Length: 178
Image (tube, rainbow, N blue to C red; front, side):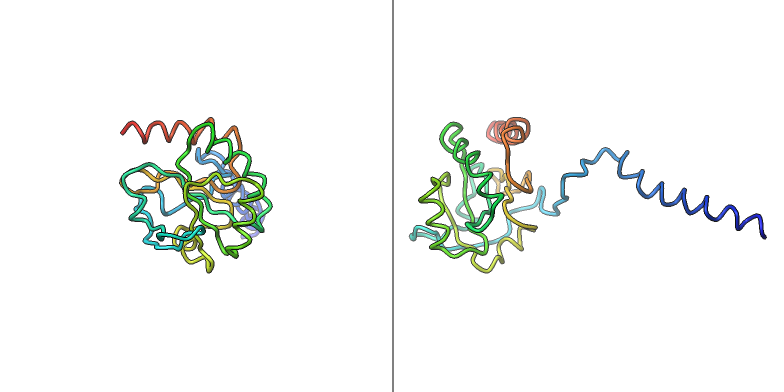
């Protein structure tokens, strides 16, 4: 009995080491937050447009590959990401839809007026309910949606040039071919 007590710390160490080792060798990127929405249809939404006019809905996005970017005027990482989005909109003609998340419309409009507007359309999600349906952890978050309205990729945090070149643009080319 006494000898088995000496083995207890070794056994505990092996259990804890195994707990931390399994994720390291699983092949999963530890920086990527999982999303239950991948390969699922867009959640139903019908949001007012920032500039007025027709509402923006999940149904209005069907039939084309789009990139949906959740942003806010109060979001510092969104300001870091903004030049990347501007380049994508002008150089790559990226079909970018913005959703102003938990933001005042006047503040969103001012931000886009001052910094440039990379979006084809901007919707207002004042209460954050659409963001909740998408599974948004915080802004910025970006979703790639295929022609059938299924979410194919999620980017958490600000997009940067490397991620755009390595992941986003190749995925968009592939989705536009199919």
